[in-house]
Image 1 (spheres, rainbow, N blue to C red):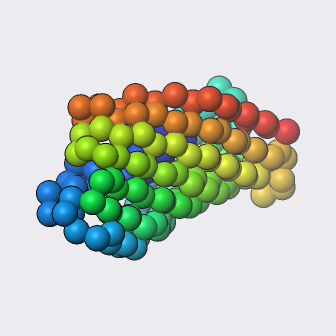
Image 2 (cartoon, one colour; image 1 turned 45 degrees about the vertical axis):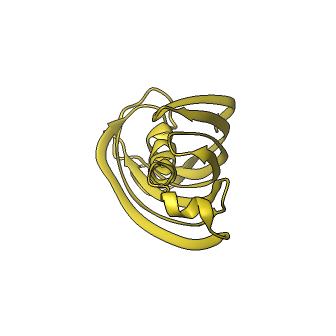
Length: 162
């Protein structure tokens, strides 16, 4: 689930890299703000709190950022917020929010580097609506786009379920 959301951000960022206009190489810097919304689910997950328990995720998100194109390179900065709910078979559920900040830099149309940080927090509720647990997630990731292919490495991950 986290990878799917992060991958969505990376795809949005990379799509712009692949569409770098040739005319941008000979002009002064341009700055373009952008925003987007998205829906996820419903789909089955098992990587949330409680760990290993399957649930159905649904959620929605918003993103915003800016693209700066100069004669020699293109940079993007993106912030994405994803709010979601996971329903478990016993009637319990998780309400959580994930914020991701990422950057993408390229000097060619089909290669570049990207990275970011994902932070997430949520509350696990019993079927009666009582809070029975907390979720905290933090990850640092970076990668490359080479010949149109993503290679991602997660360098730090911490998931806490209490």
